[in-house]
Length: 237
Figure 1 (cartoon, rainbow, N blue to C red):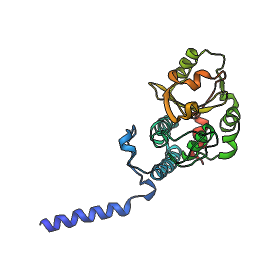
Figure 2 (figure 1 turned 90 degrees about the vertical axis):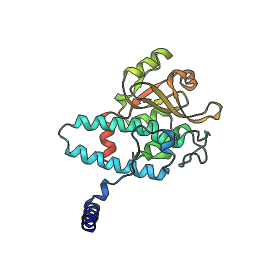
Figure 3 (figure 1 turned 135 degrees about the vertical axis):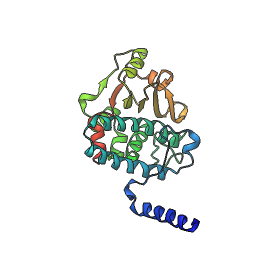
Figure 4 (figure 1 turned 45 degrees about the vertical axis):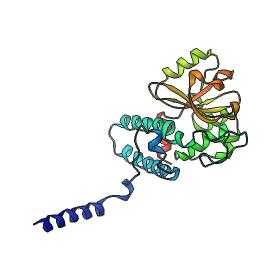
């Protein structure tokens, strides 16, 4: 009887393995990862998961009757993945004006190259060299509609901080006088994620209220990456 039961269990297991769709298999990563949980995965494994999820989002979007739910899920995914999963891999990668590394914590990376590299790693196709070496505003106009770019240079710093909180949860690009990076509004706090040139600090994530790079800049342009237009282009690439 025990042998018969064991045979049935094994048969069910083998059948379930045969019926599983390889496209749906993915590396299991926590939605809100801690540093300890992320470092056990290689960056290549994380990039494979991102590519798989990108395809899965397209499939779910095409099937869904209520597209707004998929847009919200994609927005949350970008906030968590760029702001936590990917950032923790790149954290403390050194800055250099000529830095162009594609590998976290190996070599150096300039601010523009950091932004375009993360976008490429998220599965968004772009000309990395061209966009990394142009001014931030030109890069933003290439990635998003000119109408979506907000010139917030007229605001004092406290007003700027408040405005970024008010525009809501999402991932944004900010263009400064001679610098660029991501603004991450996670719904509770707003962060500046960038390769920091000050003291050659490199890749950091800091509260926007405490960022010297943001405070020192006279110009501040912001555009969103987690709006419907950008996310729809992303899943169709």
